[in-house]
Image 1 (cartoon, protein in one colour):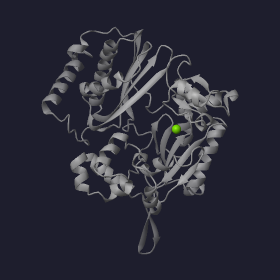
Image 2 (tube, helix red, strand yellow):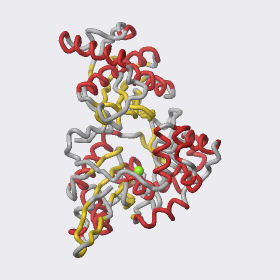
Image 3 (cartoon, rainbow, N blue to C red):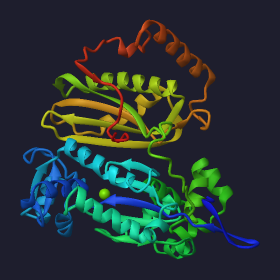
Image 4 (cartoon, helix red, strand yellow):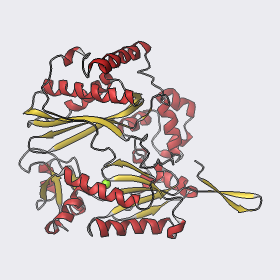
Length: 420
Ligand SMILES: [Mg+2]
């Protein structure tokens, strides 16, 4: 937590409070479309797949949000809220291209940039704030560079706090185009005003679990005995305890630090479009095996599994699940990925499928409560050795024997990787 020790005066030192930004682009996909097409500006628009297909809103412009349109809302429902809404098919390549530009703006200020999704990043401005006349000035300069370099319709909201937990929490408070700062001394009063699920990572399931234990507010969570939380949730209990006190990591690695891989994954364009769940599932297993093998080579483990599919009409879905253990076991990853796959609407043919694992850490630093099974590890190691010597997939799981004739295999990276 200690960032920098500044000599204050003889005999006393002051620990400088960190200035962590959480920068969240406002209604990102919709804003990108409005930036690209001035006709759409100021109008309620939603990003979706094909307007005639039964699908959901993947992003809504701020004008559409005023009518009550939200992401994940069914198209017909969005139309009911806002009959004049304009649907635009998503153009993921465009958004990735713009994200790269945005990241370069952040990097022109500092290399302490941690990209967490296509439209969100943490930036540590502690060492550079003074040079720019303070952190608020840095925030305003970033906003004006966005307009200058990407376009005058682009806005973001910035939360400034001593750690990532609070920065992420408050970047939402003054949307759109806001800046909100909370200093360490003000964290307790902010925590009194929020709900449990306002914390990033505390979902409805955990909330229900806490409710059953008689915990309904952040204050009640603070007061709940730590031992009981740990007994109930294991390691997560420790996290809940520190969350309730507003404590969180303030470490932002350098963007250029190659050891800090954001995610690892593989995706392929299928030889022919298909709605066959078994075929997709088998392909997914192969992708999981390939990914996990690369993770083991890099001595990395991860705990967030993301599955993405793209339909033949270019409509795309991406869903993820965070599990409470770290793994680099392909089959274990596959079991989670397959469950995610089953939640996708397979009502039109799929042309691309991918899997990626994020929240990576080095395997020696993590505890592997579920996968730390020596026998299993030995099997994986043996498989890797044979495959190293004789080529990929010489040894494979039985269900992979139904060999797939894959047309194109894009090695490498999940969509949320570093955008380099
Ligand atoms: Mg956003």
